Image (cartoon, one colour):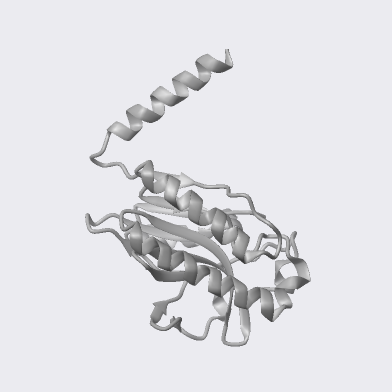
Length: 212
């Protein structure tokens, strides 16, 4: 029955959660989103970060472009949307200062220089720890109309009041030495994906933000 399956699933989750050594708890989170509404979307993300932290999650992974929704279309050309997304990202970062045990990875469109990138932002302890742009754009969804790939980067930092590393080769390491890397949706499907290089560089966990 459905109840029996749910009970078994709940028991399985409890068993896995009870095994601490050698395991890291990761959550794939699908929040409610509104198209082109970074304020609302940030509120939903913050609520889910809080819930994940209460459940002992170490890394909470949110969808690709979660701060704006994936389907903004030509609204991605609007300064108001991009500015709002950056402000929402800063709001989330500030909130995590109260939740030092969790790291959130949030999808966001970011203009770096004069170009727009589809990014994953790694956030913990009140700061944005790094920004990872998508390496391979999805042609079926016409992403090249709005975004450029990671290869178009001409800097390795961005400044949000402090310098933040940016790149598709970033590794993020916890105090216990566990390292993880980030890639975005289409990146996974390529013969030599960013995750291949990240694993060779020492990543033990790969998170993939997806929406397309």
